Length: 346
Length: 184
Image 1: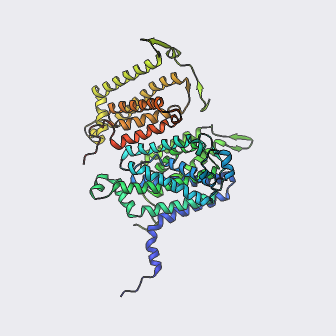
Image 2 (image 1 turned 60 degrees about the horizontal axis):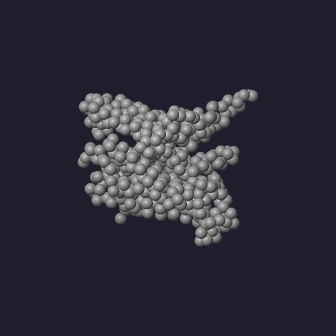
Image 3 (image 1 turned 120 degrees about the vertical axis):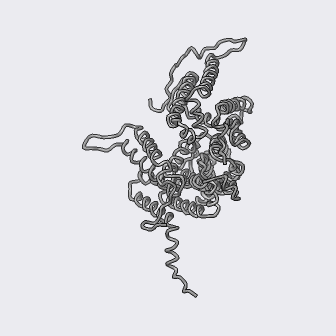
């Protein structure tokens, strides 16, 4: 009988496999640590960036593995934000802002973590109900169907005045999300997305992404695996919405509509929607570019003179850069690949 | 002015009303219908009867095959893009007359409707796009008129539920273009 392999070699064997996760996690942690040394404004921007990262990873879980671009994930963010806000707000605040709230919700004051999980689960439940019929669609039809989810959620949340406050902002929810909370959830999202994409279900789903007809012919239940991805994706998006709501301390339905959708989708496409690495890279690149261009618009002092770019130029340059990236790397910066260990060929 | 609304009085004569067989009609509405019909006919003629139109349809159906057969597909697609720009400009003139304001984001709502209309009509077929756009508009107006007032604010939600239902029953759109479904 051969001697048992020492355990360190098993760790070494798992390293190339786990490397994308480890490297991305380390990169995010490094960014957060750097940001924690920066002034408060920059810290808040970094927090916002990490929240966007959770949302982009959420979108990636579905769009990356299934190949269908979803415009509906911001709806799940909105649902998560509202559910968590309603569950964690002080009862006194609720009686002021939402006098018509049903008594069941009016009295509850959940701890923030329970509220966040409930927000994620509510979003996942919505995805299960909406996705069950819609996941049999493919291509542009499926994208439009997810867009329909976004519009329906926007209209309902924006007009269901007794529960959501309608067009008014929902105020008075605990603003507990700081850099470290956001970092924690970003790491959790990373781990969940990574574990998911290593499962059999995700592998089958990626097969259907490459060739739907062939996958079906091979006996893959495409609809079921799409639905699984959609639900996990919605959970993460819901969490991202919870974080955004409790970061701003205010929930407005306008914040969860087209602008945010375009931002999240652009981040994923620029990074490359085919890999988790792409999701992270896209978020970081766009967040950093946005921040740099914002600084350029604010300007800097050279001696007595203020040198500043004209307002609005930042958006133009950002759009140009995104255009160039897409032109030269149509599959995004990461091009659908994950990071591999340096010096080792897999 | 930045992104604020800017009011303007564009072609004010279109906002007058005329009496036609006992019905008071805004001239603008008649003009809109007329422009719509003319553009639709013009586009149909262009796609059916001109060389570029034929190449455009070929490139839409099978981009690679069209190139192999000598169609300058990239240029044709660029022409299509320009053409859609011309159509959009015509629409925007009518919209500005109707609303009397301009704003950088004023087209967003319309583009969303247009996109949805094309997809439920059937991508790659002009008849489908026209039918889809017409249906989305018609359903919106009918709902606006039929819904009880307390549900009227949810109108758009009903429209989009209907869109999802149409897609579920006809994933390729109402009038699917021939050759759009991938052959295996």
